[in-house]
Structure formats: C-alpha cells, structure tokens
Image 1 (cartoon, helix red, strand yellow):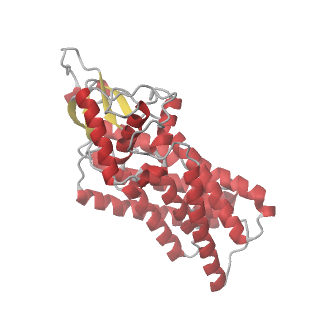
Image 2: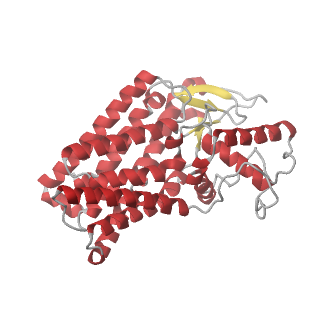
Image 3: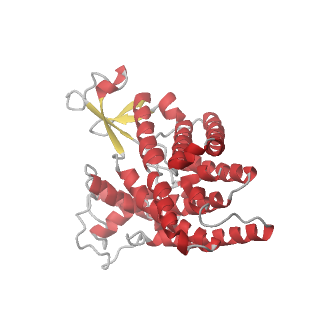
Amino acid sequence: RRAAGRLGARSCASGAAPACGSVENQALRWRFAAGGAVATCAAGALLYRPQLARTEGGAGAGADGVPAFTMATTKYDQSTFKGRLLGMYEYIDPRTLLLTSAAVQASQKALESFKATGKKPDGMSDADMWTHRKNVEVSIHPVTGEELFRMGRMSAFVPMNVPLCACMLMASTTPQVLLAQFMNQTYNVVNNYVNRSGATVDWSALLQSYGLAVTASCSISLGAGQLIQAVPALQVMGPFVPYLAVISAGSANVSFTRMEEWAGKGVSVVDGEGKDLGMSAKAGQLGVLQTVLSRSCFLPIAPMVMPVIAMKALKPFLKVRPVAIVAELLLITVCISGMLPVALSILPQTMEMDVKSLEPAFQNLKDSKGNPVTKVFANKGL
C-alpha cells in the first residue's frame, strides 16, 4: 500500500527510517507531517514570481515590458509552448486565492468599461488592466461566467496537494489508506468539476461519477500495493508501478467526473467569429483525452520519480524520521510546483478542430460572410 500512494510519496519515505510502532511515535509523525505540510505550502507559494494580484491601479504598476492591453488576444502567445507556460505560471499563482469576490467584481467592471469604450479606465495602466484580466480569468469560469469554487481552482492545486501528500505519507493501515485515498480523490473530483469545459451539469450523473471515481481509485491503489507485495519482481521497477496506479486512478477520475462531456451532451463549439455552433460529444472526447494525457499521465512523472531518486541520495543525511518527512514534502512541493504549469502548457487551452472530425451537424456550415466553416474551437478544460 505504501508503494501505491499518491505521487509515490509513501514509496519515497519508506526508505528513510523504519515505521514507528508505538502510538506515541505515530502521533509524533502526524504532528511533524502537519507542520511540514504547512511549511511546504508556504514554500510552494514563494516559488511563484508574479506580483500579488491587485485591483487598484497606480503609477507603480510596473508597466515596463508589458504589452499594450487588449481583449482580442492573450498577454502571451498561446500558439507557443513558452507563451502558454508564462501564462500558466500566472494562472496557477496561489496568491490569487486571496482575491475577494468584491475584488473580482471590480476587475470585471474594469474590463466591461474597456469593452464598452475601447479605452483603459482613467488612472489605469496596461499592467493594471492585464492584472484585472488575470483576476477574472483565474476566478471566473470561461463558459458559465460563475465564480469558481476556491479549493477547486488550479491556483489551489499545489496548496491542496501538499497536505494530501502528508496524509498519504502517514497512511499505513488499510483504513488509513482508504481514508487518505477518499480525501485525495474527493479533492480530484472537485478540481475536475470546477475546471470542466462544459456549462451544464447533470447532478445525478455527477454523483454517480463521483462514486465510481472514488471506488476505482481506492481499488486501484490497494490492488497495486498488494500486487507489489505478492510479486517481488515488481519491486525492482521502483516508482513506476505506483506511477501506473496513480495515472490509472487519475484517468478514471477525470473520465468519470466529466462523463457528460464525452458520453453525454458534449461541449460547446464555436467558429472563428465566436458564434456558438452547438454541443459536440466528439469535441468533448478530445478534451477529456487531452486532459488525461497532460494531467493524469504527464504531471505525476516528476513528483513520483524525482523525489524517490533524491530521497535515496539523501538517505545517509536523513536518519531522523521527522526530518525525512519534511524533506520529502519539500521535494514533492517543488516537483508539483514545477511540473504543474509544464503539464498544463503542453496543449493549448482552446482546442482547434477540423469540422470533418466532428458530427455531421457541423459539416457544411458557413460564417457571417458566407465562407465555409472548416475550423471550430472548444474549451479543453483543465
């Protein structure tokens, strides 16, 4: 079970020192893990360089090097990996979680004023307007227009995952493993739901998908651990066996949670002019597949492999169990913080699709100028 934990955390820590057997030692481990989780959450926040999001303009906005503000294009070129990466670092900045609803509304008003007049509000620089746009984009769902649940935002991914890793790190008995997996997959479902690409939600189907995701994730995690114990040869593979367990559980979670997109109504598709052309299940299938590849398969690589290698190298210096736990949490935080924007930047947020790959309803359409619509676009989701 330890080898099949989230992001390989248990497999990393298991080599640091023997497991504590007494109740006192167990309590001590939990206290140090809790402290380490808090410390690493703070460390993760410091990894992000963007300035704290603000909603008030000023001369000291740091406009040097900032492109002229526009709503027509993004701040960074989304057609390149570098542009998407720079944009994603701003998108997942955990400090934007400090924004209040009033601050988000103020940013929305600033953008609405710009859309109505084509000019920046008095006293605001380009940097201020880009900050307003960032505040809205990280806080408001692009399709529904509703404010995103804070714990489910991508900016909360690192702060939420560090304490979850601490729980996974301490889980040793079957009930503890199940509880830790339940909390982990519950958070994953919330994150997948908040960052879905579609607008409408069938709550009955969502609850059913949640039950399937939790059941599958717990079964895979426990089953993989038992398989490793039963087949000693698999232990040679090190972190790759739990990696397969994690991507299987993560893929099941994303697929079940967003089932309505790929096996139901689909997702909204628009043309190059932004006109809504209807719902497409095939576009939804592509969006879920791309999310699984980037989030569930690519993202866990660094947090699972690199901490294992690093902990083995540091083992002679980490003979005290609490120190080893904090060190591993720091490694996991750094890996998640570094890999998350990379994983989310591999593929563009907006999918461009040839109409030939979609349903017949999207064939032979024309835009407002009478030209055939050959390319359509849809939100991939995160």
